[in-house]
Image (cartoon, rainbow, N blue to C red; front, side, top):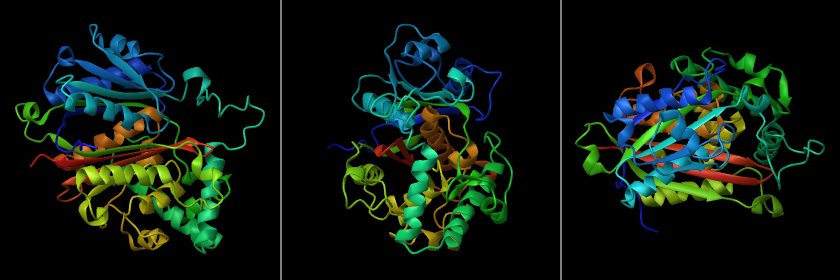
Length: 393
């Protein structure tokens, strides 16, 4: 497979505040995020030649994006790939630009999960739909099973495992306080996280991400065009997407302590980017911490920690803001929030700002390479997405 490395560049990004945006429609959020991206890129809406619109709940076709931005008869595709939808939307725009189909592509992810269709209702269809009678595995229940298995597999007691997860939650809450666009902006303590109400054993309230509204957008072009627009454009180094068909949970040897789809997506992105040792070569990372156990497992899936050793790295502060490999510097899903199809682009927005040196109080020193990761699905049908970025210099 030919690599996407250095063939496309991000020249503009925008992101709304995430949260309970009762006074804004999804179109309002799209306008806010996209116009921030247009201004950042130094272009106008009329310069966009193709668009990709990621959403589970707030639109039926690409016409929703055209309507919000008043775009005139350009091709727009609606993309939906569960929690990996934002990154998939971005990838589609990158591939079109790299292929020379357009000079400027727009990728947008948006959701109104708080009040659209009566709340967090994903309208899941077969093979996931159980008509509300046999819903065996809600997301919390599913990821809770991974937590209990991880504790057992690596010999952690409940108390030891909960302490590790609590430290991840405390880290992300701290990072969220440094980001004015994050949904939750308050510090918590380890004790508070451990003693929080149980959601699905052993996961408590502070092990779980919020249900949020929000939108993020990116303007993508070729490097030769980007260099005429701005000096601090960011290059795409690698993209990986892997969709599972439930293979793992159907295999008796599956260990329930890794996501094969995330591993496959990461390996594909690493090959394209030429990454040999991600722990040494990646400066800032955004992972899909829908639950704290997901972040813990992802450290190992991405090769940032050896198998079974992620708890030791958490204890050592490896993934803290001042640590060896800062993870979820903007608060992650845990504190920034999780509007399903917007999350991947929100992660890219954070890495984009970090690599430009514009992340404010949460800036990682000398950040030159960054990675974003998503894992989405239910009942074993997962999609993994990984993207790698680098500074233009």
